[in-house]
Length: 86
Image (cartoon, rainbow, N blue to C red):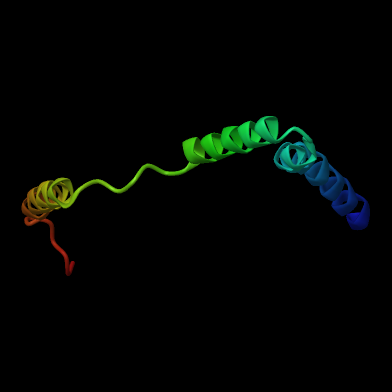
């Protein structure tokens, strides 16, 4: 019974992953060099669009840390009257 479910999941996974692999492999079968290079450029652009944006500059990070510190201080002040050892 467990083997049947595992086989079903594996088959579903392979079917879902199949089109993504085929999409990457199609460029190398194009015979005309300009068309093939255009295909590779489209794939590179698609890959670039899926990547994470570059990290923000240090000034923004410093501002973010400063704001987090202010928020932490406000929380610490608000819980100062709570009995911690009761």
